[in-house]
Each structure stands twice: as C-alpha cells, then as structure tokens.
Image (tube, rainbow, N blue to C red; front, top):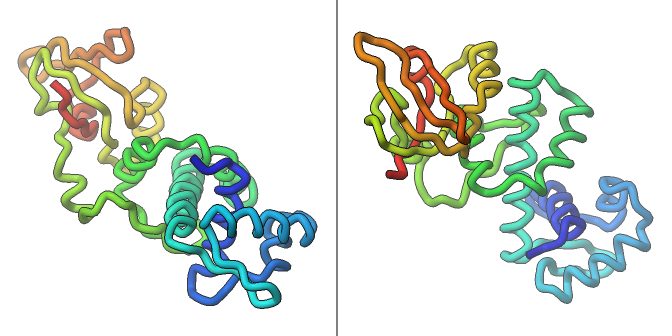
Length: 222
C-alpha cells in the first residue's frame, strides 16, 4: 500500500498532467509547498518504485500503477469537496484543506456510497471533472442494485447505500440519526397502516417514518 506522502505526490502529478503533457519539478514543488530539491529526491524514489517516468529537465509522467492511485485519490478528494460544500457548507480553501485531510482515510466502499448518496456528481465545486470510479459499470446500473428501505422485509439485514433526496435539511437530519452510507441495519418491524419502520441501527432501535424510508436506499445483505 502506498504511503500518504506517495499518494499526495501522485495526486498532484495526476492533476498537473490531467489534460496531457508532463509535470515539471517546479510546479510539483509549488503545489506541495516544498523545496524543489526535496521533490527531486522523492521523484527518484517514485521512479524506482514504478509509479512514474522521470526525465530530468523535461518532466514527469505517471505510469499505469501511479495513474490508478493518483486518479483514485483525486476522485475521493473531489467527491469530498462536493460533499463538504453541498451538505456541510464548508467551501473554498477550507473545503479543500478538509478534503485533503479526509481523502487518505476514506475507504473505497465509503467513497462508492458517498457518490451514490450525492447522485453521482460529475464535477467538484471548482468545476473540475470527478474521475469515474473503477467498478466497471454505469452510474445507472450501479444505482439499480439498491432498494428503498420500505422494500426490505422484517428480519432482513441491509447496508445503507445512499439517500435519495435533494432536501439538505432532510439529508442532514437522516445523517444525524446515524443513517450514514455503509452503516449496517436490520428491519425489526414494519408497523401496519403506514406506520413507521423499526430498525436496529448499531445496536439501537430507531423508528423511521415511511416517507423517509422511501428516500433511504439500502443494499440487502441477508
């Protein structure tokens, strides 16, 4: 597994070469706010490890191995920026800094669920394209694998996939209740006559109204 510093370098190089060309040592140093000599030393290591191709005085290109990591981390970063801007209200430099801290800890599963919850955004708040995921399927097919909580039978277990709502207050309320993408739950009872759905969420019994059960999408596990 690549170290955090390696991931950061590969992400910066990916961004600088996203539209083609090579990344210059000086541009990498400026982006990372480190001395050019330190960048040169790190580039030699990345080259030895097979992540990049480094041509002195010309620039750097990502090899397939490095591009996968750089692209994956860039995707997580831009999804997090989108989430922070749209759902938390943290934008601009603060959103960028927070995303930088969170991107390394975000698992691939959490990234997938976050993307679904936000209905597969195509751009970050700065207008840059969010790289496609590596799951090998269209967004439509990806979304079709989950169902609303209202369709889960009593006694069945599921994992929260995403929330199908554009109402920010409603989304925040659901997240605050613990219905975070990736959370496991079990339907204990569906109260008749349109009553609430009682679920066990992380050891706690929670009642969720039917209308909210329709926007809470899950993937059955049992």
